[in-house]
Amino acid sequence: DAGVIQSPRHEVTEMGQEVTLRCKPISGHNSLFWYRQTMMRGLELLIYFNNNVPIDDSGMPEDRFSAKMPNASFSTLKIQPSEPRDSAVYFCASSGQGWGEQYFGPGTRLTVT
Amino acid sequence: AQSVSQHNHHVILSEAASLELGCNYSYGGTVNLFWYVQYPGQHLQLLLKYFSGDPLVKGIKGFEAEFIKSKFSFNLRKPSVQWSDTAEYFCAGGSRSGNEKLTFGTGTRLTIIP
Image (cartoon, rainbow over all chains, first blue to last red; front, side, top):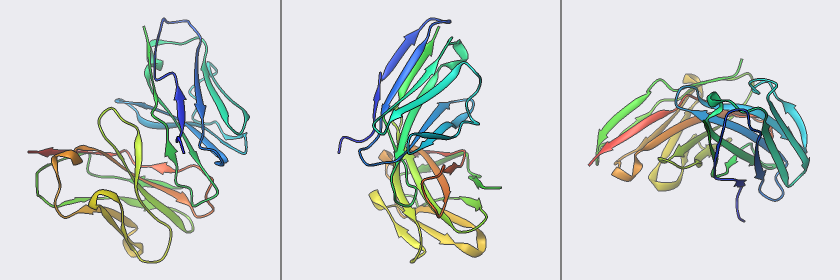
């Protein structure tokens, strides 16, 4: 299995631009999680989906952030407009019908200048 | 409320020393417990997991963890660390039903001095 796939791996953009991060979960997994990691705030859960349905988006920082999961094999996290404080590594993780262990993708390092 | 606590923020050890990283949890009901490792510049990788049964769980790279229900603890251990164990270690807990979010501790940064 290829594991969780994220793209792009690195993104540098200017303040005010729209940013779209992409994630492909492990085939057969039915839960998908978006995290953000920074030195200051550590690892934060932004949102998670079960069977393509958003279950908990209480971690989404503000309306500039939105996430979708149109099908079982694809999810996006969009930031519009982006701000320098959004600079972070964004991880996607997925889990299956097991005991809840999550498998993380390689992350997208976002830099907003 | 569900919570996972890691009280050691930064641990520095010499190679061949023994390691124990603390993790305490607070959960209503039964809980699944995990340890993840994040090597510098990489993503989180699963080290080991506990669901039920033998409270002593063995994971990859010589790590083990012991579930002690009476102490609400799930400490990570390794008898002899190597320089390559330098990383950040996260304890996490989730409800027994699975397919729900995990609650992560704040992480412990481990530095091994050659």
